[in-house]
Each structure stands twice: as structure tokens, then as C-alpha cells.
Image (cartoon, rainbow, N blue to C red; front, side, top):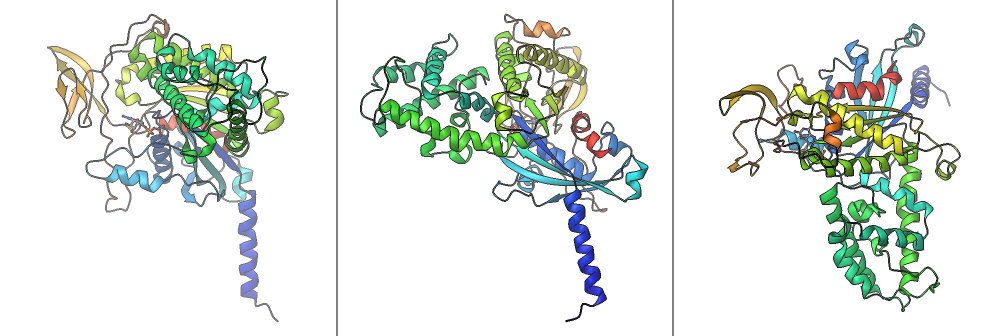
Length: 483
Ligand code: GDP
């Protein structure tokens, strides 16, 4: 057989391409935050901005004109669902535009960026490439990490104590009443497990809805089940055990303990081992404005929640965690989302408040070893600013189209007309917002319609999506890999 020169070249080129691809570094960027913190919108806007070269004066590689192009590629992990970028864009392109569906499970997408290096040596080899694998997952899952270090009896003791804490006892009442009727040492009963799991999940969800609390003993999948919705892996709950009485295998306690271990082995460990521990960078999105508007108590809760998040990232060397999982996150960004709900004059204040919260939370969680950044942003800006006369006074307002049914006082919006709203001012001294007895910030928030994603113009280019400080977040998370 003979090889023609043409096929040789083809084979050589292909080998070359495969080699370049193998040599292309991959940055795995985790995006997390509690439900509705803004993960879906952040990722959609980030990808769209990269792909369409949106306005990003503070994203240095883009501002310097070194980014050649960015495009989506099939993600490398076949067993992981793909982040539904196109579906989310389609929601924004509807008329009227609508917010896409929020994150309910882990998903992933790969963006490849071609850029010209700053280094003349690397430039001599042509265009450089970087794969950015964006991993979206519910922040609720992070609370499960401590479970790995606990057995069933220890978990029960902690959960039962927590359930009678002042801010939780009302929510946990039905579950505690149920517990009082259960004999952990009686022969196991499946109906009882189903009922207990349901009541326990209801309690966790109710407590979370009120407190934004992450500092619970989980299980995180009870709050956000992901692909485990309805799975038998989730049919267990803590019981009121007497630590001095051992339980047999076929008792209620024995059955629950077995399921607790299965949950750890089949839900918690795979997530930390296969996904979390492979991240290089992480952004944690935080809805700070909601708790601020509820008052000092809610803000203090948020601080506790964030310190438990931070403790997950504090993967010190020599800890049992690092013995299990080796990779390590070197940059961690906390971002207060939805900054377009307040006037630009308050953006720095929002950032300052989150910074104080994080500083205090970090004081409690030991050194994470990672560089920690703090920022306020709006991934997708739904408002613009204007001074408007409100009750005869000229006030810095935001203007947007409130979603149908949103209300301020007795004014109900229809979802079609613009409104100018004075959202209120954030406190100038961030510490004022953090006093446990701080009054609610007196802010006016409504959900606005997202800006409509317009179809491409004559030049084939779609207009960029508006944002606030999204470029700074990208700069913190990506720039050094694009140098
Ligand atoms: P997820 O649960 O973390 O995926 O949250 P989403 O990204 O789905 O966001 C939840 C909701 O918050 C959205 O439906 C929007 O109403 C709102 N939201 C998120 N990001 C922004 C933003 O940048 N600006 C505004 N105005 N609203 C936002």
C-alpha cells in the first residue's frame, strides 16, 4: 500500500491538532451560590459576553485586544449534563423577555478562548488556547461536606439539638412531633422512613426560606435534590437516639443509618471527588440585598452561612479532606449579585458590606490558602439610572419594567410599563448593616424584566448584553491564565 503525500500531510496536521489540544490548559471554574442567587444568569451572561466580545473595559485581555475569539466546545465529561446555554438565551430572546429557569443540578460547559499571549516568546508559537470548563452546581450541596466526617449517631445528635434552636423550633415542630412517636429500636418500617424524610425535608426548606441559612447539618440534597429527586437515597432522617443503647441492623435506626451511609457514598462523595475537588477557581454568588432588606438578623444569618461555605474551601494541607481530595482552589471570588437593583452610588457600599461579612466569616473559618476577592455585580442589567421627582424631591432612581404582579405599596405592576423606583440607600458605614438589631434597610425591590436579547443586526453581530462589573469578575477569575 502506498501513502500519498496528501494523506501524510492530513495525518500530520491531525496529529498536530491533537497535540495542541492535549497541550491546551484547562481551567475549571466553579459557579455556585444558594438557589436564586443568580448562577444561571451569571453563566449565561459570561458565556455570551465572551463569545460576542461584549463591552469589557476591566477585563484586561479583552481591553488589550488580545482575545482572538471564543467558542463553545463539547464538554469533556460525557456523564455530566450540559449547561443549557442556548435554552437560557432563547428565554431572553422571547417577547417579552423572560428569566430562564434556575439551576437545579450540576451542569457543565466548555468555552475555548484563543488569545495572543503577552509574552513574545509564546506569541512566536502562534495563538494560545485556553479551555474554560464552567461547572454550575447548587450551593446547597456544599453543606454536606461535614457529613463525611460523621456517623449516623453523631449526625442525629447534632440535628436534634439544632431543631430546637430559637429560630428553628417553629419550623421543626411537625418533624419533632413525629419523632416523639417513633421508636428507633423497633423493627424497621418503610412508611415511617418515607414520612420522616418528608417532614424533615419540609422543615429544612422552611427554615432555609426564612433564614437563607446554609449552616444546617444538611443533607443538602433535601433542599436541592438534583438528579436524586424521588430517589430512595433520600428516604431517611435523624432519629432521637439514646447513645448508650446500640441499635440492631433491622431496626428503624439501623435502616436509617444504612441509608445515611449510602447517601454519603453515592451522593456526597462522588460530588466532592469528581467535581468539587477538580475546580481551580470558584465564584460564590450571594444575594446580599435580600437579607439587607430583612434586617440585622438575616444579615447575621447570611454571615454564618458564608462562614460554613468558607470552611469548605479551607482545605488545609494535612486535613482529612485533603487526604481524600487533592486539587486546590487558588482564587475564590464572592460576588453580591443583582446590583442593578440599586443606584450606582450604592454599588461600592454593597461591595463594602459583603467585604465586612466575608472578613468576619473568614475570621471564623481558618485560612483558606486561596486569594479571596469580593465584588458587587449585575450579570444582566435590567435597569438604567435616572433622577426622578418622587414626592417633589429629586431622587436617584432606577428605571425598568417590573415583572407582572410585582408591587410597591399598593401599586401593582402589569409587566409591560416602565417604572422609576427609588430603591433607597445602603448604609454608608457597612458595619451599621451588620448589627444584629439593625433595622431593615428600607429598600424597595421588585423583580424587573430582563433586557430583551435582540436578534443580530445587518452585520450579523448581536448587540452585547448590559451588565455591571461583570468584566471585573472575569478579570479576577481568568486574566492570569490569559497572560
Ligand atoms: P440560580 O438559582 O442561582 O440559578 O438563580 P438565577 O440565575 O436563575 O437567578 C434567579 C433570579 O434572580 C432570576 O430569575 C432573576 O429574577 C434574578 N437575577 C439574577 N441575576 C440578576 C441580575 O443580574 N439582575 C437582575 N435584575 N436580576 C437578576
